[in-house]
Length: 318
Image (cartoon, rainbow, N blue to C red; front, side, top):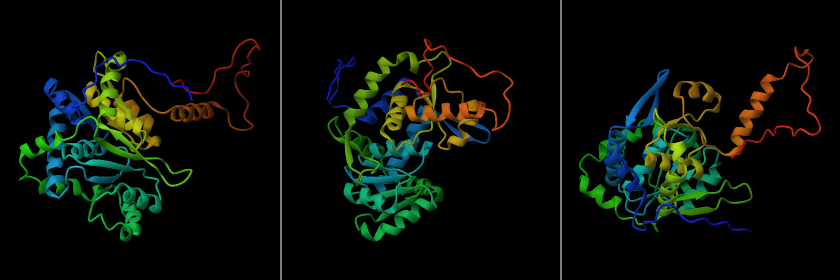
């Protein structure tokens, strides 16, 4: 195996954790639009200060519900604004989020929640709850279950109104760079999913260095923005979400790839980040649409390529 190294462009801070990125962003640009959420045919803005207020409110609710520092919370949810809200609220409460892919089977869900030692789980839909309910008897440590589509996030927030700000500030400062930020499990295509430990420094240092290395991407005269459509249970989308908080990039979400083109037209992102296979699917879909139906005659002759001319590759560039 070959290993490639390059020096960091930003000195590491072993004391920093992910919550510092949001706190620093709040201090720098409290009124900047950090997210846009779908509303009707358009998008409604969420400023940095409003996002921070929602994060703290949800973190207080988690504390009031009995979540302790270091506790693991499972999350099964598609890519949406609430995913990142829950993520940061969990960190502000001093806890650790354990994402589960939406496509996971009940058996995989049971294994991930049990193996990680989760004490609570947040599910998005009734279908997700049905998967969990099938294996709940095998998860005796989980005694708290919330469902997003039933409005449980608002109920969590309401339950934490008496938790003081000082307690959230104390908890968010507990973690250092070496502490666990999340456990992300593999897809389980070759056996049981395996948990990968990612620390706060993994996200903080990668975001701070990428903020410098990708400065041209993360800055734009009208404000940089991106639309997340790959699953946030994947580490790459999770990194993008944290990076955008650090870099003051407006983020929107569209989990349904069938609605991706309309969403792109209304959101108008300045850049997109995704794994290569996603761009390959877009390319292949567009190419398929350009082909005439079977038996139809093309209005133009087929394109030929001289043997000395390389054919364009359908593979997306990284």
